[in-house]
Image (cartoon, rainbow, N blue to C red; front, top):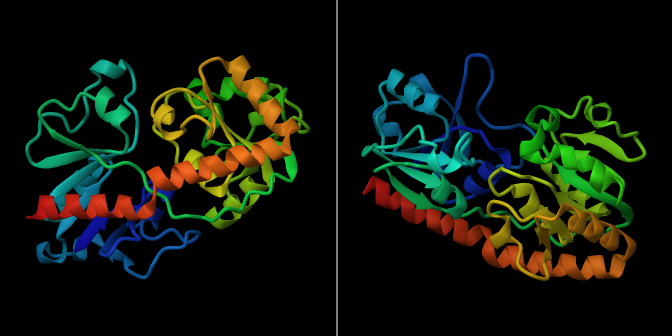
Length: 313
């Protein structure tokens, strides 16, 4: 199929474009959109000018933001549409209406069952296609007795991403924080560089290499969808410590990590993994086995193939 989709979420898109289709990635006049330069994508993912496409050029569109529907209509394209929702609802979660609620012209795809449960989509058909990740290989060494955190814009997002919890974890293990928008994080939290180092946004291969050198992965997210960084850390063979919120409770089975809503218990678990490299490595092996079984790339792509065939039939 010829699948029109925008590059919005790098890790998710990297898995999606590994399917057996041709992926059309719109560019914009300001130079945004298209293929990301720092990611390893196949040649079947090609850049296109949206206004140059004819209706016959697109079999299905995967949209991820309401404005993308407007872009389609503005250039006269009206393919079957799947609306992919990455996020948990904001505001009053059980009562928050989805922007695509009560529609019969598209399907909303959620990446977790938790999101499907919490969004009110009205009569719009919903489907859950859980995440899938390319296997980065068992690369864990844990040679650095530090904890890794991956988060984007932690100062702005604050409690949503558990930014306020980082000082408590930093007391158990020095933190290396990866992601976008980390400027001023240490000062914002009152942490000196020896307790928290903002590393920044790295290309995915280098990110995986650097994560795997840290002793333990800390996932302090309160209210975000299931973080692909958590799944990738598990696939690398890292032991994980995470808040037992949203979909993490089904993604990290017993023995593959430590989940709790008691932050003191999680801080203690991070300290224990830091102090015992052998135990950390054992838990990391269990984490890798669990994530490859539940979030393998093959099943992810098979589910998407099934859905795309259905909506274009």
